[in-house]
Image (cartoon, rainbow, N blue to C red; front, side, top):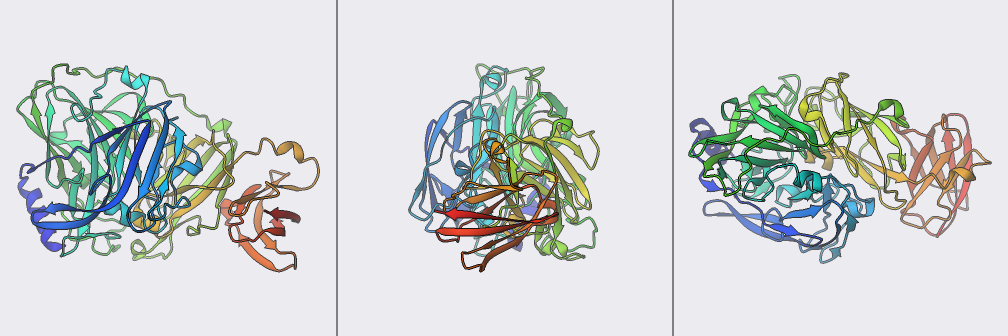
Length: 574
């Protein structure tokens, strides 16, 4: 919308003071939570109502406060009049509780996930994750923060009074049409907001203040900093506290990422500063830079004109007021050590390649794939043994950077573009990180522990939501092989569970771990082929799961094509 874009441009040029008090979402304290997903309206622009979606309100949702070790019981009721899901981004939960695209909440129904909070103190968030509709539901407003506390964090001398010295900062950009309605799948995101507030200001006390930053945008990368390069202290990334505060002047967050920072505002009462994005420092090939592709001649529809692209801009005005009665005035020296996972201990190494569907100068306007395939609800791309320590290398062969997110786990970053010298914001624990463009890569390590499921998969995907909706996503299952190994005394392969329930998954495990499953064919009792699937080269393994969603009860034959033979097994669907 060009009228709105012009207004925002004027705002940036003249640095008008914040006009609207920052909305602080209300909190819900556990262990029981009720979330009502609903349609609503919100007045982003004076005199104009915009159709929105929210949780327990017209837009956004309450901040959920949890503690490590809590047994939470969440009821999510869908009043939207259309299907949706709700995903607990960053939380270590079973696949059945994860809220991915396979766990659809039908209109008028209630989903009731229950789980033990196993994450350390951290800032997580929740948002819909319906296949092909994630961007629409998030853009229209369904998103909320999750704050997890534990004894280490509460005893570390950190600010933790919500809305007083500890603030949720959900930063988003949106596009509006000429009727002031939100447009999704758009590159014309020229309206900036924090906590659904346009042109916001926040009164903060003259002491140590904690900002929990969440990049909740569909695509935009923010390069956070303060006015005049004033330093701040990075204390946590996606998965929780670092080993010690890191004094920085910038922290870059891609969509889905979080960071916690401390601002030292001692002796600043009466002054004003800004939380900014120094987008002029973003390199080509990052959404938000002057050029979204590595080559400046690459086009991205409606990316221009936009005053945020390649320019520095204010995000939030901070007005420093009197300190509280019990202020935090010092920065902690350290937190708990983080034990590094060792690549030499890894059980499995996997490669993932991010690619455009169409090469060339117009590739940014098309869809993207992972390992050459688009997401299919009826395909499992990767099968992971329970308790496996795995190293994943994600290589980006496209001209734009992609934030790579993995459900269920947090990971440590071993290298970026082949270098083990990683920046401070890449240390600690993550569930999302930006993969550099043009052949860039990240290497990560993680352990898949606690949860195995033969029924529902987890996801890995690009967290640019239009890319995710366009198929840049894969499914993985975690299977418990520990009780199966002793049965592999004869035969070249084992399939389990057998019998298998309909609408679940069957796993094939080769006795020879050096062999690869390259394809499989399912035949009915009459010898007719009912399903055949060729497995992409980067997804071939000795262990593979395939769904039996659309097969009726009965006996079937599966032919497993490996690099050395064809193995035939029978199985029963109950």
